Amino acid sequence: MAQPQKIKNILFDLGGVILDIDVQATLKGFYELGFSSDLMQYPHSMTTDLFFKYETGKIDTETFRNEIRKKSGVEMSDQTFDEAWNAMLVRIPKERTDLLKVLSSRYKLYMLSNTSELHVKVFEKMYLDAAGISMHDVFKKIYYSHEIGWHKPDHEAWEFVIKDAAILPEETLFLDDNIHNIKVSQELGFQAIHIHERAKLMDLGFDL
Image 1 (tube, rainbow, N blue to C red):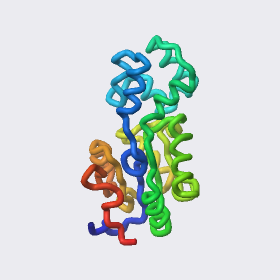
Image 2: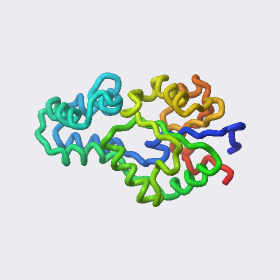
Image 3: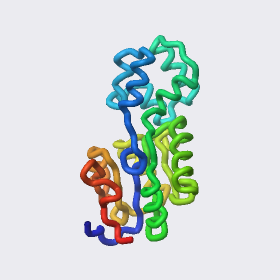
Image 4: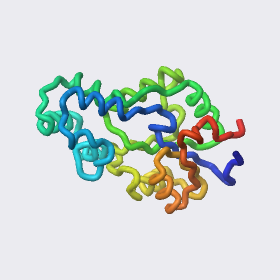
């Protein structure tokens, strides 16, 4: 694949691009815990529910767990819930961390991810184990939704990155596995590639 011209920065999504995820594994955990149907709609009910509030930093982890207990009517330990919530985080293959290390020497790398405090602890360790270095050593800046208060596909999420990182969208390639996020990023002027089953990160043909 020919590379877009004048690219200085690459802005990555995490899940489905760098990190292999399996949301069904978390939903299976929820089902086995006996959660009600409204809590089984993740991530499709993100606009109004507890998951959205947690992933945009409107509630902290302790409040999130307690609200889940209240809404589900299920008594469970923090560890039991955390295991179900984190079950969707599968792996970060070393080949991807190797690619990112090379790309970081040629472009300024950034990350914009819809995620939560509990997930960060797990996938940052996955990255460290796979790469031998921290994600923060590879990316110039990492933007987590629960820290910046904005969640893709809200325009404000990208606008926060543009302002904070002082980058130009037209000089930035955005990679995401969600087509809605791709379309919004293009509306804001980013060059973008949709990562999916037939166009994975390792298939993009970066000239290394």
